[in-house]
Each structure stands twice: as structure tokens, then as C-alpha cells.
Length: 256
Image (tube, rainbow, N blue to C red):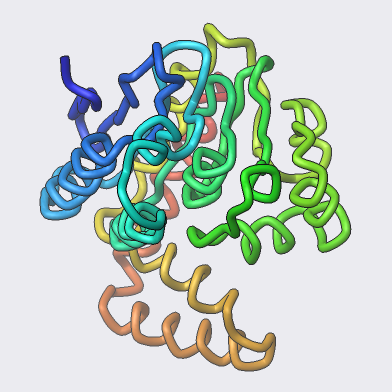
């Protein structure tokens, strides 16, 4: 049985972590399969968006602690961030469909996604301090930027879970839905993203992500520079036609 199920659809792919009996813990084999699948989809021009979810009651419980306990020597070889770097290298949006527990490394896996949708029973927890490790996949820097410094410290220093409703209130997740609606909602979002002008998603994602790392004045200048470059590549008449198509679609959806 494969540790990872990959389903390619029109414009998007669904990655399902498939170790339900182990709460989708990130074994070395699963990490390798994820990295390979990310590279494959990144090289496939037909795939613009990824959905990442888990099978069973957990999204991901983090590193496989049983595997770690059996390893000789220290654990440094297992905590490298090759997986998160591979997610960052995929230039389209990644939607995290958080179906259950997202713990420690699984929490970091969720934070490496661009948008999060959580099932009502989902929960997030950072237990690095409880097992005597420090995060290395971005949690200590990403979480404070999402929910604020003091909240992030509380989450990380206590190891207590953040349940879906609280995660939504804190701005950690975009939506909370019943479990049976989780994947359909993620697919609906992926399809909406795929309906944008071809090629714009990677550039828009880079615009936001790179600008977010800059001081505000530099980010504004960066946005202006990229906007001018993009505008030079398209005729005004083409933009007008696209705008009219968007307006017509809006009228159609309203039944006008």
C-alpha cells in the first residue's frame, strides 16, 4: 500500500497522506514520496494547484517517532526541512484540507500550505517542547505572523491543542466546515483558482510571498515594478475582454 495517494484532475492534484493507522506520521518513505510527487506536479504544466489532506482521523502527527527511536545516533538527519522546501518550490497555491490532528511536524506541514480549510474536528498542536526538540520547518516564524506573537508562544510553550473554531477565530484557518464537506470545499476552491488567467497564479503567489518578507515601502515598490512588467505583456483590449467576461459570469451566477 502506498504511503501517499496522488490523484491528478483538471488543473489540480490531490495528495492524501495514507498511513491512517500511524496517524499519517511522516516516515522517511512518506517524506520521500511527497518530495517526489511535489517535483512531478511542479514539472507538470497541467497542474496549477495542490490539495494536501490526510486519510483517517489525523491530518499528520509529525515525524514517525517509532522510526526515530530505532535510529542510531542523533535525530538531526530526520529533522531536515527538505519536505517544506519542496512545498515552497511548487510555484502554485497549496490548499491544506485539515481533516484531523495536525501535530508538531504535521502542524508545520499545514503551515507550509498557502490556504487552510479545517474540518470541525481538526486540531493543531505544537509539542516540540514536550519532546525536547526545536522546530526547523518554519513553525517558530510562520505561526507568530499568522496569529500574533503572544498567542504563538502560548501554543508552543504549553503544547495544548488549538481546536478548529479557535483556529478560525485567530486567523489560522480560512474556513471550518463539517468533515463531509472538507474535500468538496477544497476542490471548489482549487477549481476557482484554476479558472484564473493561465500563468498568473505563480506570479501572484510570488508577489505576495516575496513582498511579505520586505519592509512595507520596499514591498510597495516591488509590487509596482511587477505590475508594470505584467502590464507590458498584455494589450488593454485583452484586459477589457477578460473584465467583461468576469462581469458576465457574475451576472450569470446571480441569475440576472
